[in-house]
Length: 351
Ligand SMILES: Cc1ncc(C[n+]2csc(CCOP(=O)(O)OP(=O)(O)O)c2C)c(N)n1
Ligand SMILES: [Mg+2]
Image (spheres, rainbow, N blue to C red):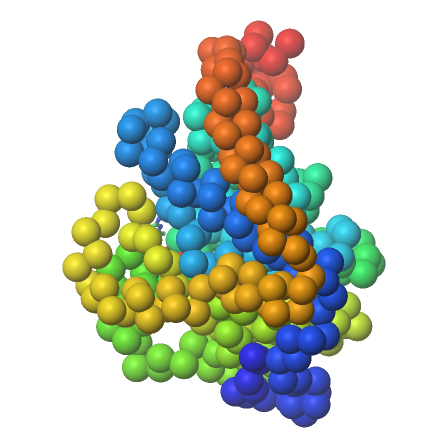
């Protein structure tokens, strides 16, 4: 549900209540398939990470899937997407093959970033996905930059810029919001508000715990959205994107969600209770969507099992692809680093 917290008349008028019935069978089935794939992929890679099959960091998106799929279903071809290091769900929702994502985790040349990025730096610009960023909040100005490019080129596209509740505390957010509103950039700022920045809750970092209010001083239309329901996310995103496409500038969405797992794989989670986790799990978006599918008889029990088996197979195939792929050759280190091909110290490697 997108509830208005602030600002303009236009924002008031365009606010709608969630209407679960507005979505087609195809949309529900796609949400189910995509969310289940993200969930099962991440459950598997978590096990493999513990077994030390690959290195680097691993931050899983489990619990937050409705945001990625609700955004993807409301986006159009050519829109741009950018997020933080908790970045597995976004490209999968946009249709990136999980094989190249698994290969990226394993540091293989077949990975989406040629094995140079790992978990935190997934990219797929063909699908409009511009990363995958490890510096907390860095993607906020970059998201505005992506939006600026669309405006400059005169396209009908927008940029979806996702960041955490912790990242929202970076000063760059304010500079970005100011410029984005001044220039009416087609940017949708999405706080994936899971209430924690590592082990620090929103309440411990601010006296303004309603994060949607962060848009107020820039008169940016700002809303609170239920992040456990893809319907709510889709509707809020669609409405914000429509505003941006007609030249009325950015929107801030404070999307309330939860990560079921720790911040990364090494998190004892002493900052929250098991009851709190269970409370959010009871609102699980995958279970919800499956419930709608069953209630409306969108799929038979056999068809549901077929999807579950397809997902299982996709995950297994992805891991196999990653494990069978070669590592990058050492000279790869010199590629994709410098734009300037005659840079004197490396030109022999760039020939
Ligand atoms: C500039 C910067 N400061 C600190 C860190 C360390 N750090 C990594 S994740 C994180 C918490 C961010 O939380 P949030 O933005 O809420 O995202 P979430 O992990 O909840 O998705 C911090 C402080 C970093 N990577 N970059
Ligand atoms: Mg957070």
